[in-house]
Length: 230
Image (tube, rainbow, N blue to C red; front, side, top):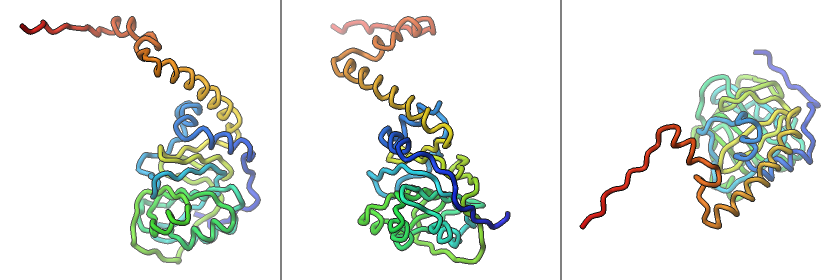
């Protein structure tokens, strides 16, 4: 692996990022053809955190957070730092000091395919993090990696400048070139769902709203009435 730092990356447009963030992870994932969703082991370290931003990527060595420090310098307001590791790792590679540095640069969150620590402090400072594990195990600064190169994080290939949307439902990544189209599809989906929500709230069953009864019967579903007891 060549140790490089790529500067001046192209980022998705801020207004599109904001639109995708307003939709949330689940709606964006569906609007994107059910793609881009990171593996469900990646969880928010404190509940209720939400973030949407453009990806600055870090490829780090296991148990070594040197390149995270390098990556901080490349961050701009509205970014999300996305950290992948060269091999499986759960060490606590990120804590409140790095979060303080990221907040000072306007970074809105961190996605890390490794461990995180200092959860209480992160919650108190309102900095959202999604990680594979929570671990007090410390790290070293010994081996270089890379910044702003394509990385695999929790099963998803993330390109610098892609849009990342994260909340309690998980993390989804949308390619920069697809972001506008996905935002439009997601907004249409959200409007359609609001109409369905009102119908369901009136007492109509999903079986009838979605016209499921006939295809269920064709698939072999049979209703059997239990005999009434005396």
